[in-house]
Image 1 (cartoon, rainbow, N blue to C red):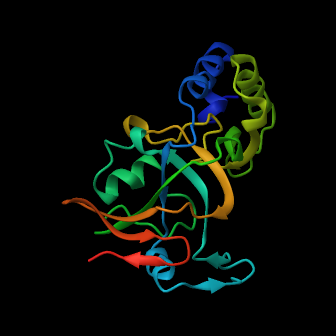
Image 2: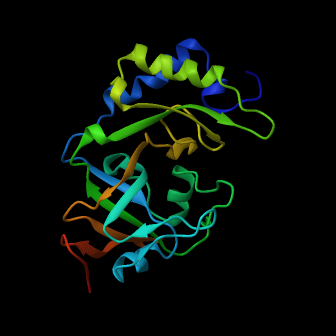
Length: 214
């Protein structure tokens, strides 16, 4: 469909080639993943917060859980400053709490443990007044035809910058993405502080509590 980005801008062969990324870029139990944390989330983890959230305003929070969009650490080696993460993960979505010029951005790194619990978000982006289904279903069909594990495929329609291709809209910094339902933080997970000067760990999950690193 003309004017639609992401999967909507691809022809049949391009969809197939794009979908094949997730037949090569795969997860193993020991694959280290990266999750971008919202501003102030690191502090909430460290103080052991459990919150039911506020409907329509703030999601629930539990210092023992992690979920949402993740990428492999090996695909994020080129990401250093907060601005890099902002571009790669397209943190400029509507209502985003992130800023490209923020001095510090926290991430969580943890092993996948159970690769079968991660889903690849295929589908199509939606734009104001446009919510096309055909490109999204065509992208999912291309993924299945390319040999992507059908148990890992999820069809989704979400506002741009969601691409529906299983790859973020980060341009030269784009990374393959997965979605994880909120689940227990794996033991040994680390919260990282990322600045223009580099990255360093600030806390490690010991299984019952976060240990702050000095």
